Length: 114
Length: 110
Image 1 (spheres, rainbow over the protein chains, first blue to last red):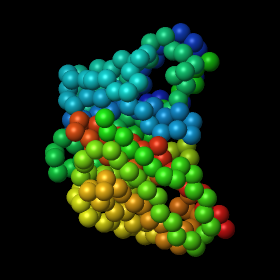
Image 2: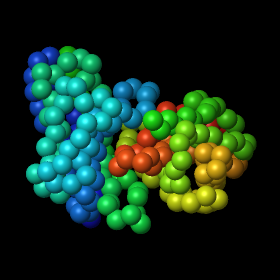
Image 3: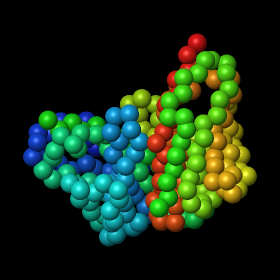
């Protein structure tokens, strides 16, 4: 079991460029989440999904898009990157089984926009 | 709207000392989680507390949950340097999301 994997680990973007952050989980979890963490701060929820084909906005969705075509994958798309999107991005997944609530995190993607 | 507050935000403590981190939340929930984050790393699950009165212990860390007081504590016993990290609590709201606290940055010095 690889758990939650994210690619790339690091990326530098120029202002106005676009990119997709990849997230894959092999635990057959229905729930998946994208967070951003600015230096020295807590987590902010960007988008989440409760199953394939279903996505919803979190606390800070502006400038991002997501899709969930399969249970395993939950990519995060950045359009027209801005310096304010410099952050570390974490993907997480969670089982739908009501007896198992624990949320598992990927290793993160460190993004710099210059 | 569910709010989760941790205190203190920063904690510098000497090795061998005891201390408690507090996590207060604003609405009813009986599921609370503690995570640890080392600098530059991801979040690692420490404890899952699923009912009122739940107590979990792992090494020098012990977590408890009082759902009536809407309070969880993370108690550190005889701190060692390896416990230096940021600790987050998170609460299950009525939605499908966890609400995270602001984190407590712990530094243990000799």
